[in-house]
Length: 430
Image (tube, rainbow, N blue to C red; front, side):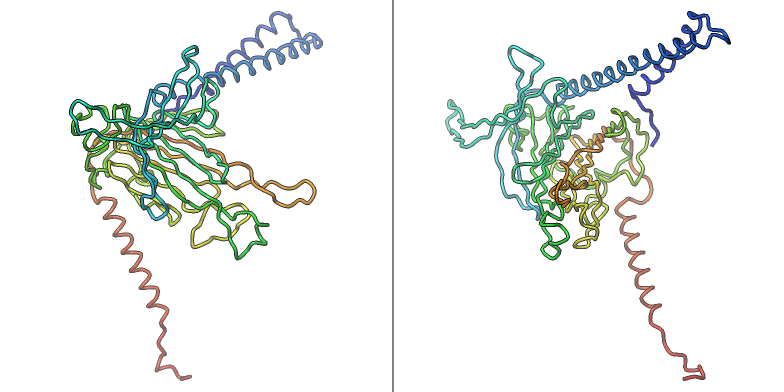
């Protein structure tokens, strides 16, 4: 991956070094330091150190303010654009649809203050359709206030280009919810992964009654658009979306994912000091996870949905108190949740979020026993905006995977045949 990196942090450090060198030269000149003027040199050095501390504090504040302003602009540009109407579909662990409802995610600007955005959910509880050409359809909507956002106070939201992550958030029921969103034109795809506490009844003494991890429960997928009606085959047939806007109800063949994708990648890490922008001229095979719909390990729950949508999340997130693998699922401390979307045939959007959960136990002050865990947090975020750069050359990834599976099977059979040792009839000790 060839790329470049834009970081306000590194720019500030170079400015700081240049300023430090200039101030040091001016301090030497103003005090007329000589080899015997040790007290004056010490006073000048102390004065320079004080000014250096103030400059570092100013640069840190400027960098934080710049990042908060950048997050606010991304939120207003790609997410807080009005009323997102869609169909909220809930899938269980087996991939079956257990619930479906028409709802909207509404972002409203306060009338007296445009720097405050309020999020409201409107769920359709009842609707009636009229057969008369001069009448209108009616809906009964129930509104739920969700949150209020301001510049510098986006709560659990983290944005990178057209992607956004909300969470991870622990609900009152103990379920951990992580929301991933990709926006394109007048449409977006929103996915919520939910993991609930799982208990190991065989080794209750090892966990002191605490859950041994978090197991995937359900996923909510919503195709939303800034349109008069939620996306549906009928609405898109009557009013086809213009170019630059997604068409949710269209056939997407599996081979459409396997292209030479190129574009930009925006990353954020909790220890990186800000966002970084990379240019992708070519994508490595290991990085093309959208071409492996079932994931890379057994601990991946995935679904490929109509309209060019792929979702992946961990089946099980083990706590730090469990040292052995359960159910042949090898869990690690940091787990990744992914969403890939083909809004148009030649455009691919991807977002992936790494979550750290149940890693640091909380100890009781008196007994020293484990009573809980530190709340989960987001450690890494990446958003890719890619376009089709041509067809892949050589063998496809699917054929290559089948060839590797066949080679692995042949090797396993060969190893088993070597374990069968026949007696040597020419040996004298027989």
